[in-house]
Length: 463
Ligand code: UDX
Ligand code: UDX
Image (cartoon, rainbow, N blue to C red; front, top):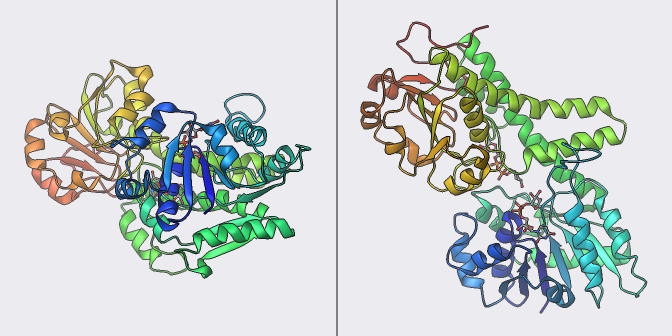
């Protein structure tokens, strides 16, 4: 039996450890966190995150070989392998503010591991970190003078929220980076053995530490770049009457380009893309590569442009004023099947419309609580409404901001009847049947396609 600890019971730690525990029944897994409420939630029937399929796995493993606890020090002492998945947000202060990763929680955790260890351990970076962080970690951990040895490995997480369970059950690859020393290789071998219980060996790739750390940043940068690329073309489609879905299909059939991740949208969100690209930008600047930095920075700038463009198009289409108009935002989660709202484009659109003094009502099946926290500074200016029919009643416009499948199933005739006319629908995810909505009487504004409207000024943003 191996004692395995994970520090950080967030999305990453909380969704990976139950799955590891389910595949390694003879090992003991403990997930710890400084946040007592979060640990209590992991111990309860109401898990702190919504992730399809996770609840069942937690129920099967919790209390058998999976435990949640706030006793960090005790569990550090017992563990042989420690995964660290504490958050690494973008720095908000000092050198590199707005770009570099804030490593204070990571360093604090490393020192805590050192203080509470009485045996040698393997420490695994699960959090996304700047390249060469492992070097600093090794220095801290091995500065003990008490004869203990710590091997630092990098094992970045590639799972996407909403499909975390299936991503982890059948990963495209597991990446493990380690030192090319004898003890480094043995540590890598131990981690490979854990994953090999269910992942085919050819999908477990081992690299040097720096390649592993950098690959995580680069994977997210490439994925986000695809979205910014297709979104940039959506703007051109709106000016030329080309249709972004047709363009995406036409280019995606080229296998070198591929079909996935070409869905034009109001913008990408989530805790990782923006943060990781900014981190990459900072690293490039740090290593004296300003041209490379500017290249990747543009992916984030294009995303901000897309969010701003969407909100501006709403205002322009609605006769250049939304002041006092009720607008229903359908979806605030950064994508479907998650309650997560971090960096959600819906928040940016909401703020932009509030600046124009719109009367905003937000609906979402799972994310209202998080949205309420994110928009706390605007308390009293936003209505939260779980029922989309109630949210859209008396509204001038609906904006689809999250691609929840249930929004495609609603009775839009009933919704249209309850709205102020002319009724506007802005589909920031190209989720709905636009022709059908148009026939019901809506003025429909998709992303990257000509609007379907009976109004003379059909809302192309004025030049
Ligand atoms: C986070 C980062 O966002 C991501 O980049 C990284 O790859 C992994 O960690 P996530 O799990 O989604 O991902 O973050 P979050 O949900 O914020 O969870 C982090 C947890 O660590 C929180 O529950 C927090 O309370 C805990 N934590 C933080 C500690 O237990 N100790 C600390 O010192 C700091
Ligand atoms: C991402 C990576 O996919 C994952 O590998 C990494 O570990 C963490 O970051 P996640 O943020 O959970 O995962 O979601 P993802 O499915 O990648 O979507 C990110 C954002 O891009 C969402 O806002 C989504 O709506 C948007 N998106 C995605 C598009 O706008 N168009 C697309 O074609 C795909």
